[in-house]
Image (tube, rainbow, N blue to C red):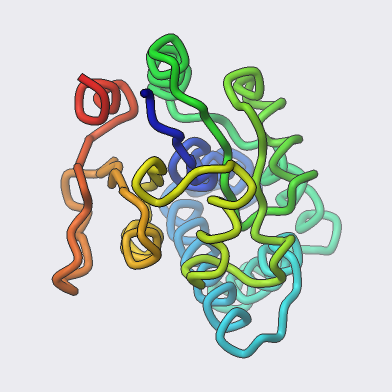
Length: 225
């Protein structure tokens, strides 16, 4: 029986640094744009962790906006409200990585059930997948928003398994984020770490991914074959 796969969205299917083009347009400097994008992404994740621990939940759009405001101050870019609105609009329609469509096609043809499983709200993820042209591959979207918490809270992985109707032994998380992989394994799932950069480091916690791939086209042979 083919497994059920939960795909992390931001950073795994969707390139969060797809906003660099707009940042370069606004800043006139690709290096500054890359640095701003990384600060924005790092703070976005930090804020989700902190809100989850504090049990002071706001949805991912709010977390993303707050992280943008932090990056604007940290990088001393002084974007106007209109420019920030432009950046947030780009964030809602980021592109998929180049390997996503072919990788998902292989898995779908192999009989896998595919779900998008995200910190983003269901509506935001639906918009993102549609804009990237990959919504058709998924049997459904599962959002942590239903639980009013964020990954890697163990409750959100249990929520995914309930929503998809599978047990941990049948479920795989697919993510480029080590914290997400460790969280899902700790909750009883299998997990594939998508090591998109050769320089990426997996957290040395003594909890290892079930498998490691460099892109989604390697998943089928690592999980099914």
